[in-house]
Every structure is written in C-alpha cells, then in structure tokens.
Length: 296
Image (cartoon, rainbow, N blue to C red; front, top):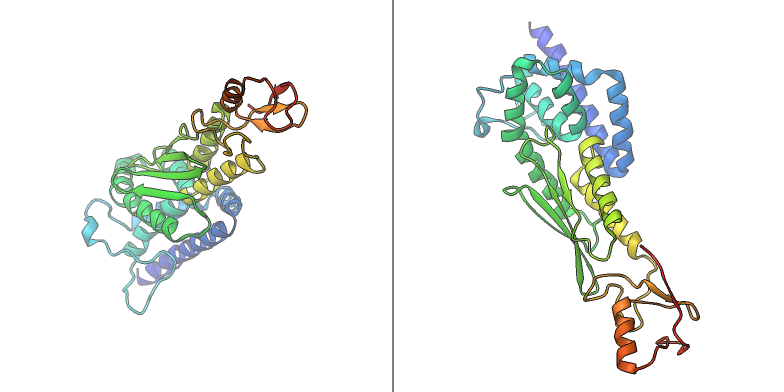
C-alpha cells in the first residue's frame, strides 16, 4: 500500500508540473495555452488523472477553513507533509484553475454521476472564489494593461475595465458565475461608446469564446479587449472642430470626410459650424461642402 501511494503521488506531482508548465507558457503567449490544452485533450490524460484524484480525496467532509492549500507554482517538501489526499485535492483545484474548459468537458461527459453534485459544490464554494481572487491579484500587479483601469469584486463576481478616450469612457464588464467554469461567463461591451454595435458584439463573442471555450484567463480577455479598442482608435485624427476623436455629445468618431481636403469631422460638429458661420463650406479648406460618410 505504501508503494502504491508513492507511485500515485508521483503521477499527481507529474500532473501538477504539467499544469505549471502550461501556465508559464500561457503567460508568455496566450496561444500556447490553447495549443497545449488541445494536446492534453488528445492524449485523454485528463480523465484518468481526475478519476484517480477522486479516489483519494473526500470533498464532503473537508471544511474550507481546514484545507491546507499548497502553492500552485512550488511545493515546499521540507515543511509540508504531503499525502495522497492533499495532492489529490490540489490536483482538482489546479486543474479547474489552469484548464477550466477541459475540466468542464470532463465534468459534463466523464465525471461519475454520483459525485457530479459534490464537484459542483466544491467548485462553487472553494475553487471559484479562490481562483477569482488570484486572478484579480495578477491583474493588479501586471504592467501589460497600460493605462487601462480595472476594478473587480469577489463578492459581486464582476470585473470592469475602463478605457478613457478624450472625455469619454469606454468599458467592458465580465460577469463570472459562482460555478465558473461549470457555468459560462457573460460579457457586456455596450458601454464601448464610439464603436458600432456590430463591432462590440463581435468583441463580446471573442471574450466569451476565450473564457468559456479556450481556457483563457480574465487577464487574457482584458488584453484582447484593449487590443481591439487600441486598433479601433489607432491613426484616427481628431475632429478639426472639437479637437476630439470621440464627439462629446454622440460619442461617435469623425465620420464625414471632405471630398476636397479629405479631413474628417463629427456630423454634429460640422452642422453646428454651418449654423454658426452661415456658410456651407469646409472648416479647413473653405471650399463648398461636398462630403462622404465613412466608417460604420
């Protein structure tokens, strides 16, 4: 029995090492997480590892305050007395954290029905709160988000990112359910002012796909949203009337282009100029106005 537990412990430690490698590769390039996850799925290893871990852990009788969680990236064998039960609990926790999409697939398709409800409660009461807390901590210390302002709450389980452009604020809200990843996240990009509805709907779908189907992290999702917004405003010249990219009143970008000088104006700014000047001339080239609507 002692030899058997030693062998099982070695299997579980190997799996934890694999998850650490996946996290390190994913932090370098988010595409690595998807590629490695696809390979893990192809091998079928996840089913065997989780079923093995379930044999040596008792999710019902352990209270959250009594759990002895070990660090996710390092194991101090000199201070902590590891046993198969502790390692099995850690394997369940780290698997949900590192490859949530694959864990959800296992829970839906291969998890023994007798423990599905117990696993669901374990995810809701233990894993989901801790993984969200860790993710918010990672977001706080990262420098990759630039000037993007991010707030999050473990109580409301919402993460909001705000992007400031001129006097307007663009925001995205990610709502993480209590049983994530067993239940899908929701994304609200409707406050992405100045961006067409078709565009922000596409952004919402991108984020939901990343979080619900590609093992992406919330930080990865926020970086994706920031990249989309950056590209949206990249190279856009401010309106020559109000000197802003986004119109203060309508939150639209300059979308009327002069056919003569090719400068772009906000519609409301241009019509206000026509009214105050009493002339239907371009603000800059002073030629009779002939313009074209551009953009979406």
